[in-house]
Length: 414
Image 1 (tube, one colour):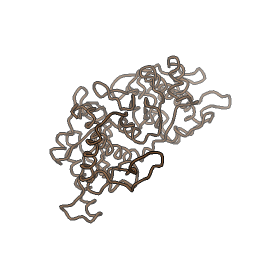
Image 2: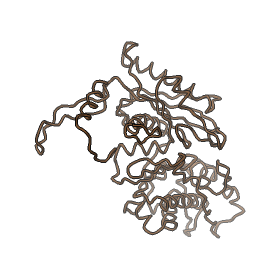
Image 3: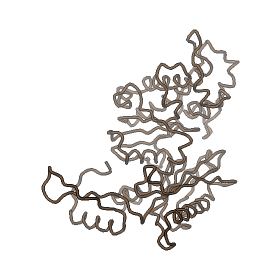
Image 4: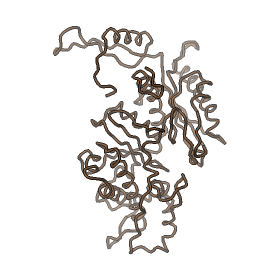
């Protein structure tokens, strides 16, 4: 699904394949006879070889600054656990996004030294890195991280992380948004047949989205396509059975981290739900949502308000780009809940689905469900997201080479 069929000179293809084999980027498999075709047997090719590797780094942030880096080096296949050659996580103290290049450089050197030791290579024959992929939880445009108060870069400003890191390492660097990287991975896994998808991730403190349009990740004119977390919503009214005075703490959600009021991120993300109920998210999600009279409990209403806000954000995506499927990536407490369950988490999912129906135009909601009864939900383990992000960042390196070869990258040169 990386390219539509096109006419290419066979001699050019043969020369390119031969060059890639010489570089140890492609490896030939055993001849495979095909009884349905004439001519020479097919010789499969695969990305492999032990000369090259891909590096991926996840930048974790908290309280407006980077707090940890998770890095790994993979083989050229870059997608499954057996392709991870070495990995390491390092905590950062008093770091900022403006000195990240130095910390990432140190981590890359550590990973390369460890890999060299594991593989027992002479120093001059160490595995070479084709590139370094960086995942950040912020919009990215032309390789620059766009400012946002939640990451410590002033709003309206941007930061070029790629250039100083390339200068330090001498290795190509590609920087991308966390949810866009999840979408890149979906392109290569081809789990869904649709070519127009919306990948929506309900992360700890924000709702992000990536748009796959006509089989390609669409980033927008300035790198900010797919930001449902910053869609302004109509907050769900408090039901008359609940007392406004006693729920004053729960009602006060505060502004979004961008400074504006009544955004999806104010209501729908785990950190806000947890704060409203003063208990861990996994416990809050299991609280009974209705009393013996089938009236909403405090937890049920808070989760319903969150799901309703998320559904409004999804409807905005549906009405704007009409995706053939929306894939929801969520914590297990939300992704695996069954409809009809009496938990607060089930209330969240029900409210999300109802809001999608209420606010979507025409058949948009039906299309977004890919003809099913509910939106596609996938579990995203918060403990695994840094590692998954690093894997996706490594794959993004390979993807950047493909995009450049096809003239679809920001450089525009094939």
